[in-house]
Length: 213
Picture 1 (cartoon, helix red, strand yellow):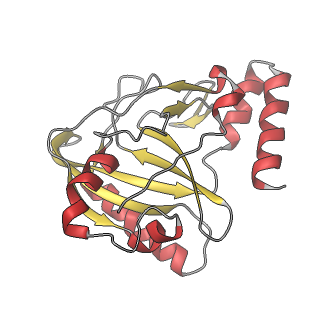
Picture 2 (cartoon, one colour):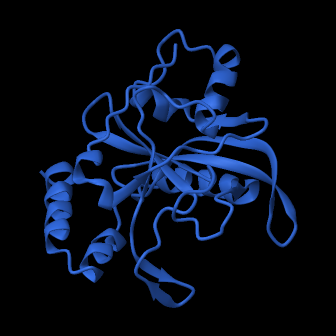
């Protein structure tokens, strides 16, 4: 049995902080790897979990082809440096936040798809990811976790059955990332550049209450 029950405490901050958007469906999602250890800690899989039976369901969920009823997907707005220059509005151009899952012992992890298609912040990009970087991030993030280095973790990786155009055509992939927070300094900068002190304060209060109570 697979059970997702997302919360999204980021939503009440208001639509200036994000744009609601859904992943773009892919042609033929296929599960490469599912992190059953992390999934068990999140209560996603039950004792009767059957990998072969549930593989198609997992591929659908972690490709963005299937959205759980408790999830309200969104792309976060933020500012930051890109190509050596400061941009007052970047945002999640190929990442979509699905929500929060509670850890079995205590706390929670934010869940995000990366490579799941265009968002309002894609700036003419395709919003996709090549399979090579997806596999690299999966392996490196889990290795860093095992070495005791705080970082994002990998919950799943899938192929899309589609190609992405980079220097050449490459197979596409999507990684599902988990972290204690996907809030970055750039979100504070985004509102600071607008001289929106109230939103900076609201974001600071949210981060303190949620991550440093």
